[in-house]
Image (tube, rainbow, N blue to C red; front, side, top):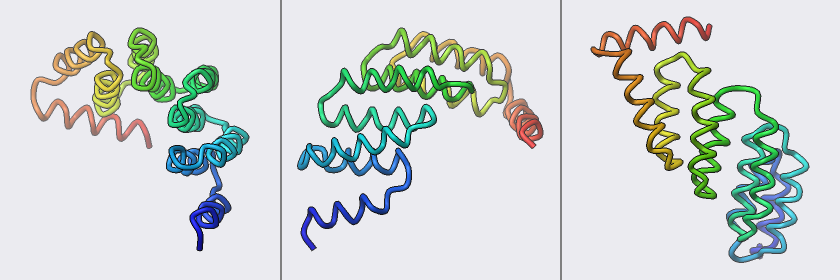
Length: 164
């Protein structure tokens, strides 16, 4: 089976924006035309911020950062939950170096989350986004609320009960 036939077979198995975008990203350096077709299909599948983000990463692989930025803006418009805002913020920081925009969205998410694991995840996302001041602020909040490992376990247990 040729490389082109292999790609076609993989494309036929794609069922989501993320799958199309991942395949497009994988082939972007060797077959830009086919990668663009896959990304257009990914766009048709986009419903949630994560879909737009993964598709934007495909366009970044094609060196089309302007279009990728448009997709991240669409992702931001599609946000409803704290962790969606956080993911979009992280994308702004990691993909485009917009640390101020990343910090704003991550801070918005931080104001909405209650659980310790979510706060830790947000701190890691802030670090990855280059939002250093926010990272430090989140870690300070975590330290203030948990003085011992039992405090952390109690917080984790409480968040698990709230999610059920």
